[in-house]
Length: 93
Image (cartoon, rainbow, N blue to C red):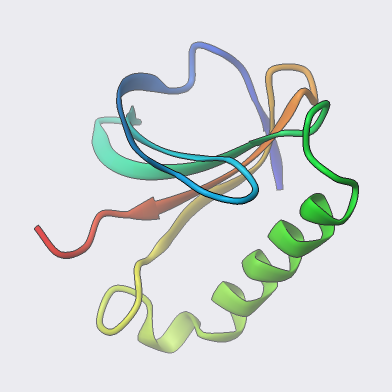
């Protein structure tokens, strides 16, 4: 888990919005990724726990990342802890 700043991601567009936040198309370290982002000041408290569980599931499924499921690229707090993000490879393109 890392802390990311506003300069770590170059936002391109919104891919979608869900119950807990937004999925954004971003450039991260030269690669295009899908960034799942939740604003912790607006989301119910259980959403952070759900996202952290999602990260753990991706770690448990490391052997099939990039083959059958997106690859976990990055995760952690963003913008001084205002948001929690999960970065994934883009699939289905």
